[in-house]
Image (cartoon, rainbow, N blue to C red; front, side):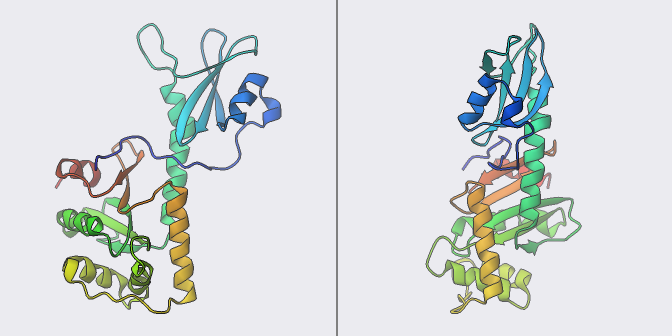
Length: 251
């Protein structure tokens, strides 16, 4: 699977900055189609710029001076500079990244690596997922060197016993060791699913799954990390070798 370098976005990030009553009719029509206005910004030639989020992407709107028409898309000057990039980054992408990262922090996760590692990655994983094990193995040099901490967010979506196995990891006396032993063993793992999942752990697993679904994810592993610019990125599936350093840093 290839690394997605598009900024990760979250569909719902609270109320829009401007209420519909404060917006002109053309902008309201864009809102009616599902766009959420996140802020306004200055634009040349009498235009009024609006930054919006639409279906997980940032969208630039430009209201004409007479207030009767709206243009949708990026605006470029005579030198080819994208005048929409900065306001969209500041008003849409950066807040989305922060909100999503905060949401990931609040999930129930199992730490793999030193807590003071300079890089942190969140990984939605299923105990029956071979590609989760593949990524766990790929990341060993960085984790062992203290450069990366993986935070595994257990879910149960692949097989009927996946939920019970995830529950067993969370219920273990030492969840980090239980996870390590399970992943290190691969197909020979002896991890047994819990026949009865304690209510608090079931609640945690349900919350993890809701977060995963809210982020539009349907498979594991789903890996989240911050790039060199501090932008939140995601990788679906075990990454190819040449992509690892983009995610984990230099060896």
